Image (cartoon, rainbow over all chains, first blue to last red; front, side, top):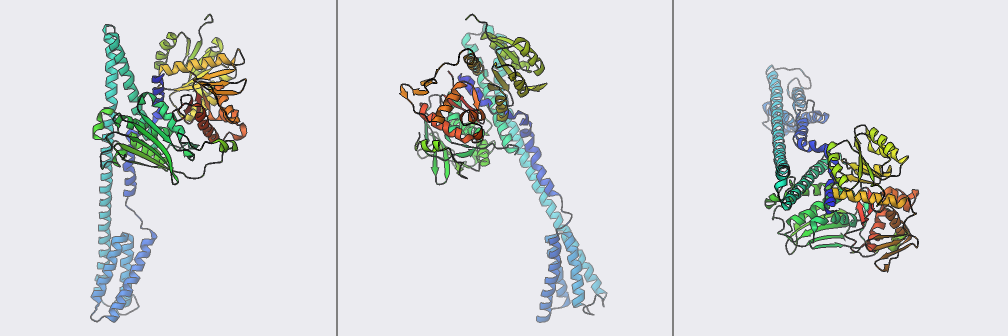
Length: 407
Length: 232
């Protein structure tokens, strides 16, 4: 019965088998796609950039006019420099198209206002043709250089992202393949021993081997379930099925699933009376609780495990605390990252997805999760559920009989 | 016991699963018929008239949920659904289509046998006599004739809906009952959507009847599906 319960607890989540492939491939394939879309050079500057080019020509002309009429010793050469500066700014900020527009407008303005005959586009001196050409070339060169730098920056970013996702993928693959192979090796070994030498072995040894097969298969099941859960949560295809739920319900269900693992462990459950109903996807919240409590069992050093739910302000706080060595200082956030493993955790199995799943589930519910230190030693994991909208009303009979306090 | 042992029809296309179920069920004294497809399953069902169905949901030639519906047009024998899909929606659909219970692969043999016994016990209870008037679950005693509930020797006062909920769960003891079924039986069709009533009432029932309401022993939650009153 116990064994059955445990298996069911593990297998509740194997619903997502077909998506296993995606967690393995998704990390590598999906991540670079986004930057490459962004990496495509923009062919057409937005309209605003052209308006900027126009504004630049006007502003430069106004500034030039002020300088020319109010400051002595300002010559046409200085004005040309001013216009070139404007073109450079536009080229650097807005790209090639606006730079050409800016150069043409600057040339036109310069011609209109500073080259006799004034206020016509006629040109009296052929050397100004050179000025025009220079302005245009400066605009083109600067905008080309800027574009090149931008593309290089994007390429660098893309390749950095790709490297990061490659790293993530290889760390996933190595931990997954290690964690899949270890129990598989144990199962294969024990089963083949039983097949070839079963008759010669004493009954206790046979039983040991069978127990090993069962336990390792269960561990495999848990690992696959965790991978699938993570995929389901990350792929965004998961539609939350949230219902108004009293928090004691998932807590009670999970303590039932974990009965065998908890054994005679000192478990202290404190649920405040009169907690509001929360909009929960019960399956996911159960998974979150399973992971937190399994963590407490694993790392709690055999000491008591405390589970607490209470209302603080407008939030329902759910805490799982243990009396173990606690979380290494400085890694309170990192432990929620995928594939992160506390150094001592190697032997316990799992790929470091449990807490990442917790965080994904909390986030999906608009809740926060944080790890901290229990006063007196040990780790505390705290999930803060915002109360949200008022739950729908209950029939009078409930309102009349809901007990004020519960344990 | 003189009557022949129960006949189980296993409709399952995966040979590995049949391979491990065959010796298990024989060892428990059940008689077994196997079918690999929905069509041959339905065929076998008509000719052999089994006492219980173990039905895989993902059959090559049809959906187990449809098979359930077809079976329910003429037989009341318990149907236990085996599913690798495990999506709560599938389970709920199968149960609402008339299945009695479900097991998610991989499942343990102990769990399977417990469900089988519960389903067969319930089937036996329903057919010959109008039902035992007194049901017991641990130290919980439910007297349907007198509408009385005791925990140990202490009488427990339940509100009308708490009592209805308890007796609905007790009628299906050992098997899971979907939210929808419970809402229909306790509050009627007008309130079927208000499943939070159910959850709040379950909290209350547990507080009144469970030794430790934070760790229920009898009123079990099947997340996303419904509730089960444990039966042993």
